[in-house]
Amino acid sequence: MNIFVCIKQVPETSQSVKIDPEGTAISLDGLEFVINPFDEYAIEEALRIKERFHEGKVTLVTMGPERCQKALRSGLAMGADDAVQLSDPLFDGSDPLTTARILAAFLKTQEFGLVLAGKQAVDDDSSMVPQALAEYLGVPHVCTVKKLELADDKKSATAHREIDGGTEVVTCRLPAVFSAEKGLNEPRYESLKGKMAAKKKQIRSVSAAELGLDPAKVGPRAATVKVCKLSYPEVKQGGVRMIEGDLAGQVAETTKILREGLKVI
Image (tube, rainbow, N blue to C red):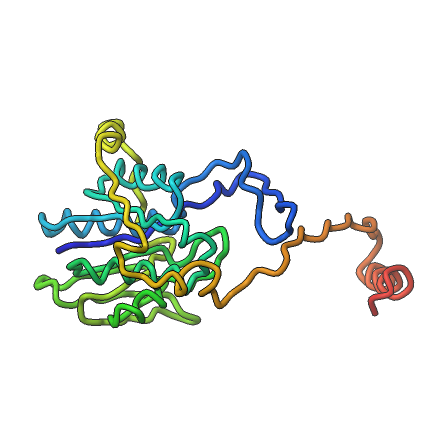
């Protein structure tokens, strides 16, 4: 079975980010980038499926500039077999739906039994690409999966996903797209042997022309979502003071502060 894992490179989340001068994006200067954390669960699941059936190939796919090769090589070091970078200046500024269209254009040229991705990217939190990708491919999709079981004949899969008050169990035919939730598995670390092997592997680059994509249907011109403005969150103010006394006195004093001091009631 050929398994494709769609990944995204995102800023490392422990860093402080700044808004660029135009106010519509974050400044990328000096930032460190990593594989989107939810995508690591998708990679791990793909590797486990391959190991279970003792056959198949795991291919990583990303769309983005040259720096995205770092994320691809990290995934290769985890154990993926191959990596593809969809890279073209025409792709810059693509929104989630356009990104899904580009990924679908590539996957339509491949034979795949399963497509995995993280449930969302931690930079924009759109959580749209896996669902849209399945729609463009014309295959089933199950999102926020916490357990995935493939049938022995590899013609169907059963996914478990948490919902309010319980767990939903969904069985669908393959090929299909599944998006991974935290808890699906525990991603493995990159081994030293894996890192050395990843350095030697060639990453295939694919352009818009090779995919036969109309330039008017990718990039900012095709985007249906536009970021108008970014702003920093409001700085939270500290507490007023500790209120001493018994419960009745604390309630009375708190009410007075809210009404006369803060004027919120």
